[in-house]
Figure 1 (spheres, rainbow, N blue to C red):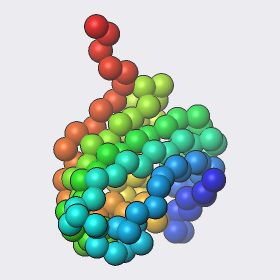
Figure 2: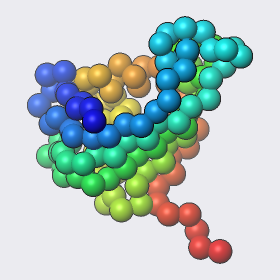
Figure 3: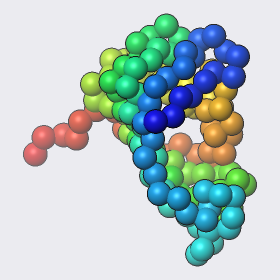
Figure 4: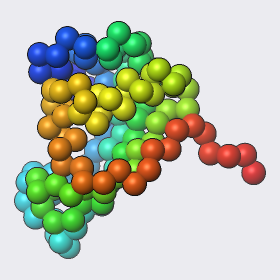
Length: 126
């Protein structure tokens, strides 16, 4: 379990969240084995508030294509937002994870070159 802190911005309270991932050379700042890296990041916020909005119990997923070294940026990502999130919660989470509120998430957001899509909600029924 990790805590994400705001880096001094009082709008983002420490979030108690889980992040699951597998380590690869690119995650340590080394070049990817085949020149590019494709990855998935998934977060579940056990408890917390962003800019006064309760985001407890919500999840967020990112799928990323990373050309070259992970630290060089130009990531192309698709964001998957929890379908239980209200519009206000969606906005708060996206503001934090896109770096608009500062802190460590803003450092990660600087690596993103293109957001291909933000998928909010459950898949359509068939």
